[in-house]
Image 1 (cartoon, rainbow, N blue to C red):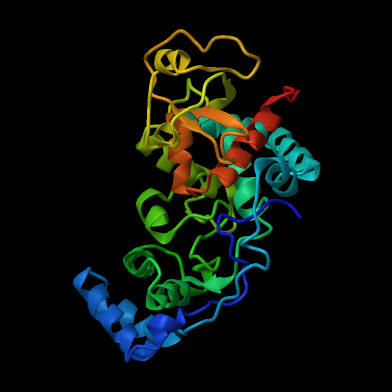
Image 2: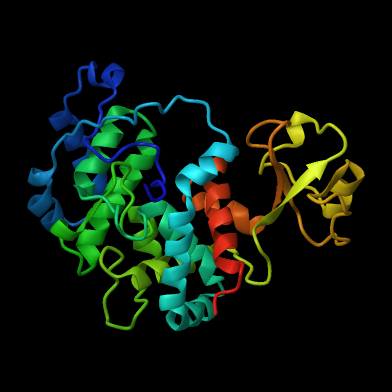
Amino acid sequence: MIGKIISSVIVTFFTINLAYAQQSVSFDDYLATLKDKALLAGVSQTTINEHFSKIKVFKRATANGSNRTINLESYIPQNAPEITVSTARAMFKEQHESLIALGDRYGIQPRFLVALWGMTSEFGEQKGNFPILSVTASNAYSGNKEQFFVDEFIAALKILDSTQIQYEQLIGSSTGAMGHMQLMPSQYLQYAQDGNGDGLKDIWNNQFDAFATAAAMLKDAGWKNDETWGRQVSSINPIDSYMVGTEYNETFTEWQKLGVRRYNGNDLPKRDDMQVSLLMPDGDKGRQYLVYNNFRLLQAWSVKEHFLLTVTYLSERIKNPPIN
């Protein structure tokens, strides 16, 4: 199986959180409150009248074994096996000129876009086909991350309100992520781009529109084209747990003092112009990484370190050996 979508949820139907559903609010009543919120947010009455009757509640099944312990030693080969690597490299070679031009336009190394493409939608093979209005409304109704999904629901309505996208096109995964790069409605609404110059912004059927939209989002967030994502390291001293994670930053010099070294044991770069974070996704006995700001920006897709480190692994395999 090639890669995984951002969420660990299998794309089947949607699940409703029973604790919430057992409250006195029915889905229809909840939908009425969403209608009021949409109107207050500026969605037109015409769009609401046209599409609200199409919104249905769905059930969702979670992946079997989702509670199993995972580690990078097994996660990376399972989610980015050699067939994924070879496919990514083949895609990069096939579309090299267009990818380089797009990367130059937005200041994003295109290998990261291809790696995200592979890991989020299996190179467009697993984009999802659920109606986004029903997806986001159902997830909001479940009570899990309610405000997040309310905001995405309203963003989806605004897409219908203000663009050429039709209701039937507005489809995605069980978490509301859409198209080749699995972007949320709010991300599309803010950053949608025409990546191939055909006048459309179709992230569902045109990977270059999806690439350009993702690239515009990363550029706006502060992506640095002259930096990479990070590096694998080792430490000669125990590291306090509060220093581990993307919320904690130090310079290379400070990490050097704390006993962090390049993976081969050599000293870290002698520069203090970057704030870098130490990750130990499998604990102090597992792999260790120093990650940079570009890595943090990839959290727009997922905050799960195993997933993100697999994206960066795939980006490195696209880069090395060089593709002729």
